Every structure is written in structure tokens, then in C-alpha cells.
Amino acid sequence: MDLQLQLDYVDWLLIALALIGLYSILLLPLKDSEIWRSRGISVGSVLGIPLAVFFRTTRGLNLLDRLARPKRFWRLVASAGIPLVILSMASFLILLLSLAISMIHEPPLPSSLNAPRNILLIPGLNEYIPFVWGWIALFVTMVVHEFAHGILSRVEGVRVKSMGIVAVFFAPIAAFVEPDDVDLFGNKDMPAKVNKAARIRILSAGVISNFIVAAVAMALFFGPVIGSISPVDRLIVVDVQDGSAAEKAGFTNGMVLLDVDGNRDGNLEQFYSDLGSSSVSLRLLYEDREQVLPLTGEPARGIMVASIFKGSPAESAGLPARSLITRIDGIEIVNLEGFRKQMNATRPGQIISITTGQGNTYGVNLTAKEAASPDSGGFIGIGISGNAVLSGGVIFQEAQAGQILQFLKALPDRGIQGFAYMLSLPFAGIPGFTQKGFPGFSGWLTAVFEPSGWAEPLGNKFFWIANLLLWIGWINLYAGLFNCLPAVPLDGGHIFRDLVQSGFEKIVRPEKAERFTRTTVALLTWLVLTSMLITLIAPFTNWLTI
Image 1: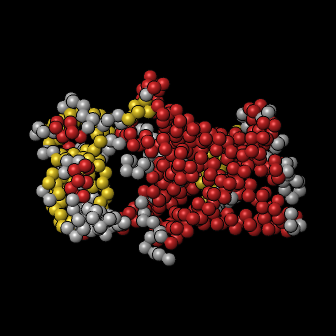
Image 2 (image 1 turned 90 degrees about the horizontal axis):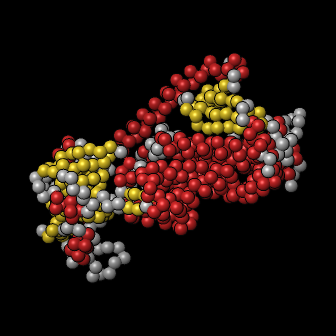
Image 3 (image 1 turned 90 degrees about the vertical axis):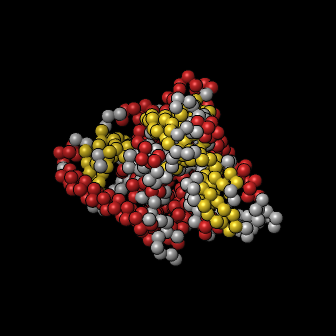
């Protein structure tokens, strides 16, 4: 399996390289074309390879002048936000370097999390970011970021030559406002039109605006929006056994049960009772589409084994994950309460017989629990996800909608830990509840929640607001943090250069300060790019350790 994952990873990388090569060839005629350049279209290269297409226009520049009129206000906002930018620069750099170091020492196995397509946060390419909400959020992020640069440029008297968008593979990936480089940075013949403090305000404006939008969007999402969502009692499909009748009938993980033969079942007891007949028809929801599927088989109830601990008695006995424990030593296990009662009566060294819903029996030699009293029960070594019902090869559990809401509501109160988890939420998901990331309130999640209070009249359209706020907040936050990295040509790289040069100028002559600054910025840019490259290639080297 590990080998297959590595092969899939290599395949994706080869496909990506082939597409980049073909795309670059198609752009070659535009690269040096004066005709297209006169129309505002030009091609940008990375390491000599044509990749980005720039679409420029001068329309809308008057709007920047009007927005820039309250100059004192914009200077105050930018100056107040600079310390946050510097703090974010240091924090995100430390996080990136720590990640690279950990990957060097313990290279991860190839997975969807580190697949090349998921390294870039491009909706549609990245499988964890929903296409529609992702592109809306990315568009908002780009416009906010670049307009902020443009407004502060005009506030400080820097001319803005044009504005536009950048497209890669014919899809817009960024917007830009193009200040006059000579006004902003100067050259060997003409000094910059602004001092370092004004330039840092201009360069920081985009990041600050992203942070402000992210803060507002997240405050609304974790405040009135989450507070107006209530859980709905539903059952969901958590596992479908390979080759089973349920798999052949079309059952798949993540399906939400709407009713059984026309009767709505919101709890396992009622569902188990309704499955007493030889065959039933289930109405299910999957990916916003309702389906009616037949289910045949003798129902069984018990507890769901979510995982098997490495080196545990369960692993030694061959007990598989995703199985249903229905009996222990011949005694029926109906729910978690019964399981705990039976296990508390065991002791370390005892061999118990575990029967699963598939009819298989496993002899498990119990061990002692770590840090447990001598008279405590024996230890199996399994992770349990709760009560479940098995029939025809498909396992149902109650959707833990209430616990999901509690987890989300608690994130803002968990401080730095909650902030860090929020950054990984789309990828990590909600532990024990969402199998592959957290896409927002879409898919099966909309069937286990409903708007309440002031949001109730909006119906399911309320989830559009929730998803819009979540993704605008998350992508603005990530874009701001990424642009803080001290690597040219990112905003953080230019800000870092001015900060470092100001420091050097206090201890050496301006000529030496300039030389030291160039060297320092180049080294740090190399360090950032190398760290990012390590995160990309590390899964290829998981068989190596240091």
C-alpha cells in the first residue's frame, strides 16, 4: 500500500511537470510580443520558464485616488498593523522551518495531505478546498490585498501604473496593483520617492487588510453564525464492507439516512427495530442527491472499532479496524455501557473471546492498562467510535452533530492552540467526526444541521453565508501569513529588507549596510524556498531517516 501511494505521488508529479511544459510552450509566442504587450497582456517567467500571464489595465485608478483621501486614517491603520506583520513574519517562518526539520528527520508517507495537487491552495486543484466557495474567497482575498497596496501607494504619493490579474493555466490566481518601482524603491539614478517607513506601510497594507478581513469573517462565523446552527438527529453510513451486498447495492461512506420504508429514524434503537424485516428500502442523501437503496440482511448491534493500537493485544489477535464488536465471551454487547461493564469485570492476562458482526471470533490476551490500578480491568488496545448497527455489510452510526458544533464553538476559547488548529481545520477535519478534512457546511453535514433562531427563515441558504464566511476568513488568513514570509518577491521579503537595512545602517556605513542587507535577504529567501521544497519532496524519502 505504501508503495502504491508513492507511485501515485510520482504519477501526479510527472503529470504536473508535463502539463507545465506544454503550457509553457503555448505561452512562448506571447513572451516577447510587443503587440500583446501594447494590449496590456504580458508573460512572466520563473527560472526562465513562461508560467504566468499578466492582464493589465489603467481603468479604475481614479477609484484608488478617491479611496485614498482620508490619508491620516490609512496611515494610522497601516502603522498600527506593522507590529502584527512582523510578529506573523517571525511566527510563520519558525513554523515553516520546524516543519521542514521534522520532515528531514521523519519523512512522511505519501498521502493526500502532501500530494503535489494539495500543496497549492488553488480551489479545484486542491481537493480539500471547495471549488465555488474557494474561488469566491480567493477573489475577495486578491482584491482586498491589492487594493490595500494601491490605496497606501496613493496615500504616500507613489504613482500606480496599472492594475490587473495574473492567470496560470488560464485560471486567475492573483490580482495586482502595480506601483511605480522607481517611486517606491528608487534606482541608481533616482532615489525613492518615499522613505523606508512609508514604504513599509505600503508593503504591509496588503497583509494587514487580509488579517482584518479574516478577523471579521472568523468573528462572524464563530459567533452569530455557529450560534444559530442546531444539530439534527440523523444516522450516517460509516463503513461499507468490500464485496458485501450493501456495496453492490450502491452504499458508500458518508451517506445520510433520511427514512426507512417511509419512517424517519434518528436513533439506532429505532433503526435496529425497523430492520427486523427481511428487506427494507432506505432513502439516503449523498452529495446533495437523494437515493433509494434496498438493504437486506440480519441486523446486528454493538460498538464500532475505529482503530487498532500498534503492538496491542487486539493487533496480535488480528482484530480488524472498522469492525463491530457484538459479543464478549458470548455475552451480547449492545452499547458502550454494556462494553465497559463487561471489560471492567476482566483482568490482565485473561483471554477473552470477541465476536464481530461479520460472525468472526478472536481470542484476545488482555494486558494491563498503562498508569492503571492493579485491580482495573484488562486492556484490549482499540479506539472506539461508539454504538453502531450492521446490516448487509453496511455500518450505521448516529451523526455526532452536537459534538461537532461543540468543537467548533470551543476553538476561539482555546487560544494559540485553537488558532493553530483553525489553520489546519480544512485538512485535519474534526477528530473522530469528519473523515477527510472539514469542507464547511456542505454535503452530508447540511443534513445533520439546521438553522435556528434568526437564521431559521433562510433555510439551507443560511449555510451559504456560513461557508462564505469560513472560506473568506481562512484564505485571507493564509494569504496574509504566506505573504509575511521574509522571501523576495513576497511582501514580507521587501519589508524584511527595509527593516534589516535600517538596523545595519545604525552600525555601519550605508554602502556596507546595503551589501550586508542583500546578502541577508538572499540567504533567508534561499532558506524559505528550500524549506518549501523539502515539504514537497520529503514524501519521496520516507524510507530514509537521520
